[in-house]
Length: 338
Ligand code: ADP
Ligand code: MG
Image (tube, rainbow, N blue to C red):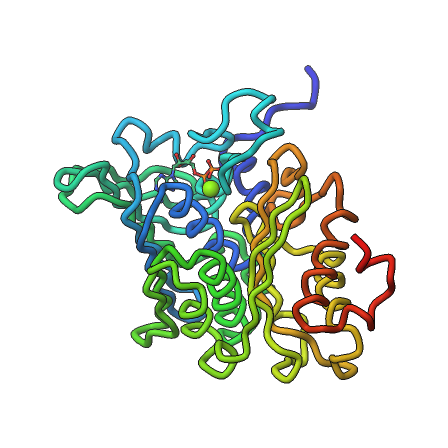
């Protein structure tokens, strides 16, 4: 008899949860991205105790058909891609089919969903097991409530920081997603207090004002431009309005909030000597490109990307910022002569 055996679904889901779901903010990110993929125009997020005891994300998106509910919680089950060719042209935020399986493995999850106003479904998954299914009546859309995150993974639970720290990670991710989607109404509620609400009327300045306040919104300058491969639109704050960290630069690629050091650096470089040492800009920049040029399948959290023509994009970013701020002469010629 050999010693090797396949792991149970529950154990393998817990393993992938370890990668995908690092903390409450990861749950919020995955659920909100699912709501965006479902075409929602309104997304409401409520959390308690920094998301440790409760996270609820409600949307008015497509909803999930009854028959699909068990699959929604199964690993590597997705409605978003089919073939391996699809992996090279991903047009949705999700595609790995891991998030709900992972969350369901390490928390107590209630999903209420309906594909049209009226009859829908409620399903409860705890520690990877579907423990309840029933028909319920609700408007079209999906509400997912996640309770007692990491209740069955004590090592991860111990690693959680203070309520305040976890809440700030949640606010950070929701802020950035909302900043990049002025066409969607977001509401973030901590316990019973609304932290911010955007109206979703496509007015980008108004959206930025709702999140960063009026003083930032009044200091915004538009940037916009393209190369053969990239289109860039966004707002940067005048150098008078700066922050002590890079956390106020939000970059979105094809609607996905991403982390990319080189792009951040390129944007900062456009400010030339106008930024004081240790100060960083406030900026929201949406980049559109052919999905073929970007690989989002780098890490399970999909926040890191690899760009095929990164330099073309970094040069464009620096140039657009420098032109808008009149710093073009302050940055190296190679970057401005594009
Ligand atoms: P992925 O997003 O990578 O497909 P998930 O585990 O996040 O994987 O979700 C599994 C599937 O459940 C999705 O492909 C989608 O069909 C469905 N789903 C999840 N959340 C929602 C939602 N809020 N509205 C509609 N469908 C959803
Ligand atoms: Mg998803």
